Length: 301
Length: 301
Image (cartoon, rainbow over all chains, first blue to last red):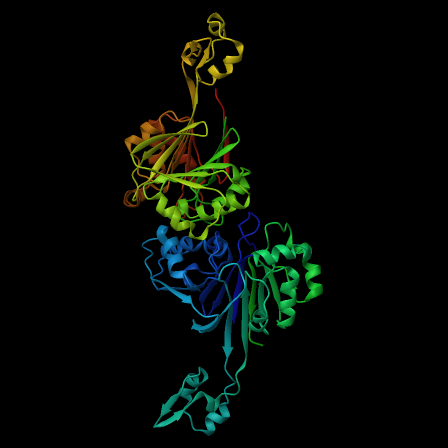
């Protein structure tokens, strides 16, 4: 099960009624945060997710609205007496940017391990989740992230009995680990069916639409995608600033056959994004215009 | 007249119900900001003060809760199409800290002029105001600031007539400027009475109480002072962390004979600072436990 909370829905700058876009995902009691703009730590408090249980922070890019809250968050995590290291993953240059910002956050009391993505596509296994990063098309190097909770095949207890595997090893095999008993090696493949559909959440901002994003987000259970401008007439602006229109995000969701689209990263010029909900739903019916702190619990089917 | 708004009342970290301590002061349509923590720009929006009219930013010290919002604020000021330079004043090391933080705020569209305070006391004339900085007693170099609106003596029109000064020069003399007419020099001293009581606002956080602060804040119309801990039993903690108890701020206000004390920079451990209002008022009756966005208009008497 994945607990998900979209902490904010704004882009460019925090507003009194709209926090900056960032996502927190809880799995097995531990949290992964994507982006950390000014005010993200306050939204985490409001969400009820635990700040001190954030083990991984994924940064899409180095524009202030996606990273300016990092030193404050790290300090607050330190004050909550965290001692385990925190892993920060982001584009090339991350180590230098984090160390610059942390000039005001010395003596954290825990290690900060920065990991720079060097390829256009990269995959990490972290906290029991498979995280993928895809380079997108923004004015600076920027990545979209997929959080995958893979699901093993069904455990075939009859087959395990037939093979004479002792009951005490079943759990390990169910967890995908091989076991050895009296010189006999039993591998998970021997007792597990085909891998089943897991859970997939894709977070994609800031970028123009690309074919690679469509492939990357394919069949996501939840696709969180930027919709910087609602108005079709803002296409030129979207192209210049390397952002998406609502319609482009909807088209990407449709092509990627995602189960649900949440638009986010609204321009401060959009007074009420919900006014454009009907338009977006016409293009892709399973579109939601979320509020700040929009939450969902994704479960295996 | 000075328009004043205390943007937040919190210390250490921003909370959902309490923004970080910062002050904005408007004089003649232009603004001076003291401190800029995470979320200060949102509070400025809420206050109704104009972000783009901030000409001077005074930084007390480099702890994150007093400066982490700076890159975001500067970016937002840039987006509001400001082109005039912004002056930032703060402790030694300011230029380097600002340039580190602004790694995520390039291309602002206006100049940022950093000015480092090198002495224990320094005075600047800016935006028609006399700003004074006093080094205080914190764990890192930290300054308290006084904003003074001085008031010249009353213009003696009878004396000006007697001296035969042409009416067209009166305004200049009232403004404190000398004039010359047909080889005759007229100085303001010739036609102005004794300087009258002006307005004085003192902002003091983070520090232990000191005798110098009492002198610095003397006769302030408004003394905004930290009260990090309400409980007298936190004295040891206050001494270690170089902060003040409510009682110490009240005692400073009393000794400095200020007209009004606003406590601020409350520790996140204080649930409701107003619970301690009665205790504080007993020590210094003209104490206020302000809310975020507490505002006042100070006028000449």
